[in-house]
Image (tube, rainbow, N blue to C red):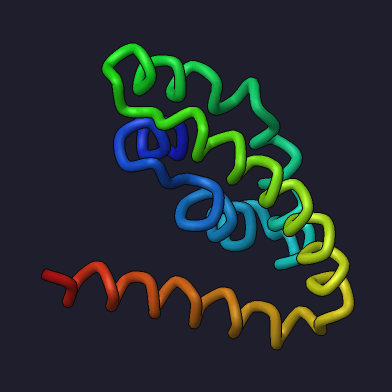
Length: 108
C-alpha cells in the first residue's frame, strides 16, 4: 500500500510505512525511521519519478537542489533524532503529522 500511496500522492515513508513498522511489526520509533530511510534509497522512487517526468511534472533543477539539501539535512537530522528519547520522538512525529494534516485540510 505504501508504494501505491507513494506513487499516487507522493507520500509513503512517514505517513504509511513508519506507523506500520511500529504498530504492525513492533519496531521502535528509531528503528522505524531508520528502516524507512534505508529502503527509500533512490531505486524505490525512481519509477514513480520517471512517470511524473515523462508527463512533465518534475522540475529537475529544483529536484537536484532539494536532493543536495536533503542529503545534508538528513545527516544532521538523523544525528539529532538518535539523541532524542523515543517517547519524545514519537510525540514530535505525531505532532508533525497532525500539523501537516491540519494545514492540508484547512488550506484553500
